[in-house]
Length: 481
Image (cartoon, rainbow, N blue to C red):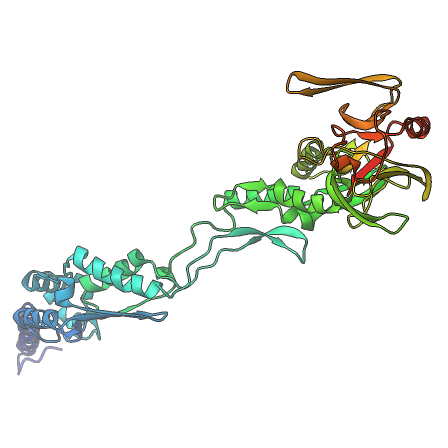
């Protein structure tokens, strides 16, 4: 409302000017304060500013630079964890830093014109800008030496392996294991990161351990498992005339399966063949030592000769290896190159109850059949001079001939020709039974008194005729002392 007495319009205008002046003054003060603050924090660091372990609050760049230099001279990095401990100071690390340049970059990050907000922040961490340099060669060698010393008693990592689980009766993957050995490069990497930012502590953990190089899901491991599992799945029965002699199963096969460090799977048939040979010993008797008690009570040990069981091992082993590698489940009938009359039990006879026993020490021969003597005679055997000895051993009668002409040779030179009426060879066609009418007597010590033969068993003509009438090709002849 207008007041003529006081001039109301003038009062209103005056009040507005006062308000404007007050507001302008306040703004001016705020601007001065703001600019003053900006000026201050263009030179000082904000409260709550940290640089690594250095408190830079309200410090000037020169003060912070001096603090960094001081910190550099007293700097040490301590590395600990998993039983490992290592320490290096700035000189050992060859630590260097351009403090002025670092401080400048730090201060440039702090916007002084944002001080009204920044001054109330609790923390201004500029540690990431604290970047030092170090001698990587010297520090690396120092770290490596410490790690190598630690690793001498640490446990190395192990790669995933394919092993045989006896409980599961199958091959399985044994997972990789880390161990406790440290990786020097990984430790150095952690130390290097700490040193460049002048951190004083490094914790060693899983990331710094030596790691396995082959893990469970590696194709080499899974392929080796598949191949070994195929082999161990085989089940082979070794039989003779349908009778099982040996069963080759997963457990026995697993002992012969090996997996190399390169995960190459191999089947070592020699290991398995040894166990097969032990089982087949009773069926691999040719030339082996055999012991028996003659019906008259004499205990005899004899070896050598060609009579007995002989497994065709080459053919057998080929079938076994093929069956194992295919994971086959089948019977393998054992083939024999020669057969005896019975299995040799505990090194006993394998020739049954029908055989001719030639006792060189007694100079007497006996033909047994079913435990009874069906023929016997005194003999004259070969001269015991190392040249014409009658060979001990277990033999076959391989022929019968009547009459026959015997010829003897030394090399290519014929040394004798003798006609006989009865010829029953058992060692090739060189040694055998025959009539010897030129011998005046038989038995005793004539064989070593100058009347011994060239190796054959000399018989009286009548005894030779009797033997010729009952002996058969294939009959066993046991020659012994």
